[in-house]
Picture (cartoon, rainbow, N blue to C red):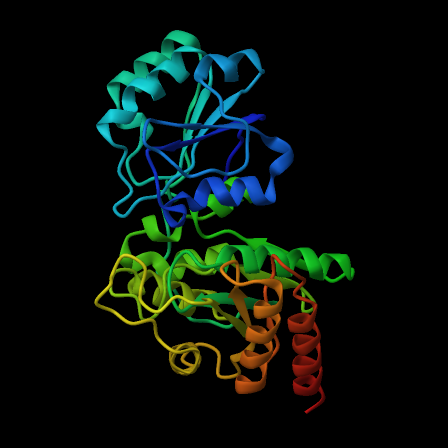
Length: 344
């Protein structure tokens, strides 16, 4: 797996982004590592607000900020040309620049020169190992849970992190396995699955979640969506390679269509469960769904409770919002399900 070092505190750079969906990197870091975040920087017309102090590069330098992290991830993952002036200013001020977009900081002559002048570092997170194996499909020891989604950007990473957090609170043996740039920045290690050449995606997923002790759970961060018109390929490779024993379906209350693809309706939870099992059984015949995780941020507390109860009643599975509450109901269901399987 890739291991990275990001010097704290951080300035989260949000560019001109107006859609919170595309600022999920910044939002994820602010949510899960708030103690490391000093402020945010928006360019003109950028409206996304993470609730952090607004800072210029000079403000950040004076406050002791060590790293500027690009906190947005637009479709295609490029660094816009109109960002280069501010990124160059940050590098010349001695701030490390950290990016998880597909464009590499190290490919920009301006940024390379600025970093060389000040001694700062360019950290490209979305770079997979140079040598990866083809997937084998062989059964590995230990247990695995994968988060899957009805769409992108609706809580697969948050759910995985919350399940790891709540399992560790109980003294259970579990580790979050980051498969995307934001998760890697939060965990400090992982493997950017969507940057892997297609032939090696399942092999990369096997490396991400290797053999372990029988009582150990790898909580694997999902990517894309099996019904997504743009990103289903990476979802299938990650599902086959991670070989999960259990999976949690993640969805967003009120979302009706694939975000950014308005011609495609959101698949039902039933459909996602059926397709996940159909594909996953190829490498793990015992794969099963152990819960539903819903992003209910668009609902009131009362509406959220009713929505989650409705999901639970309909699918006969625990349904939680991991930000508004805990994932304990899912963990209880996992414990019961796998204790029963072992007994049989």
